[in-house]
Amino acid sequence: MKKALAVGRKEFRQIARDRRTLTVLLVVPILFLLLFGYALNWDIHHVKMAVNDQDQSPQSRALVSAFVRSTYFDLVGGVTDQDIQRLMNSGDVRVVLVIPDGTGRRLRNGETAPIQVLINGDDANTATTVMAYVQALLEAQSAMYRLQRYPVAGRLPVGVESRVWYNPELRSVLFLVPGLIAYIAMLTAVISTALSVVREKERGTMEQVRMAPLGALSYVTGKSIPYLLVSLVSSVGIVLAAMWLFDMPMRGSWLLLLLTLTLFLIGALGLGLFVSTISESQQVAFQIAALASFMPTLLLSGFIFPIASMPGWLQAITYVVPARYFLVALRGIVLKGTGITVFWSDLAALALFAIGVIGLAAVRLRREWA
Image (cartoon, rainbow, N blue to C red; front, side, top):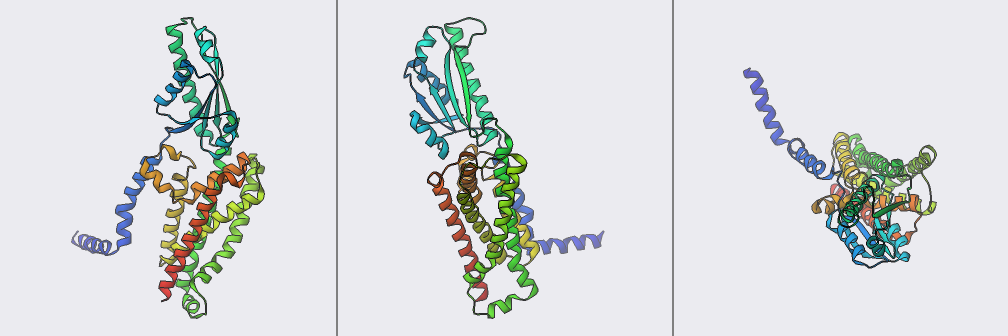
């Protein structure tokens, strides 16, 4: 027992000196708890809603108020018929409530008043939940009118007509496949380049590179080009396979899709190279690369869990996750057929991320060579 205790004391001292192991043991579990605890949330809140109120009656305003009071919907404002297409394409609203002219009169006369609800279906899970919310809210309003004025059994004064855009059948595969494309591309690109510079260090060839008349930025760029071409071919292959196997549509421009994929992959490769410059072994590089690409892409990109339903501090973190912008652009191209004018800001964010991480990798490598 004394020998075992001696080994235990020695191992405690070793762990205390090894900051990386201590961090993994103490910090990573807490980080996982925070991310999974707040991000894994199936409740949908703060759904952006616009209203096309063609009636402008007290009854129509009461319907809108019921949505706002529920806390599930955030009212963006009133819209016209011409604004609906643009707002749905850009993702500025996910639900449009269309109240036809004469709704108040029909309700006062005891007639059924049809209400149209337009739902953005690019996220099938969210769209399904939103449809359930809408149905419940309008049924509650119907029950109120029925009890107060029209106590006829089985009568629903407010009729619901739901229409789902971009994914009318609410096929979950059309929501999951773009996310899987982002996840697979990010994971493979980051890990492949994360091991490249470390491999040079372990083989001892990095010293030869340092002696060559080659700048750090040129070296990082040269390292990225082969992986970029291979990753681009692989990503296009994933898109084609998804179209063939899962009937994923392609409603936009292929050139725009290639531009989006290229910007996203450059950022992923740059992140992998930065990880490679701060790692001393391939094992450490693999662990850091997997952590930096797996969790953010899966949890903080809007792939599975809506960003709007996350706490404010976690939403702020998602702004540095490139997959967040990539998914907006990819779903816009594939499912909606939108042009670059709709999501140019997302492409700009991808370009800034790519420039930033490649610059950091070059600066870090220059310091090691100095």
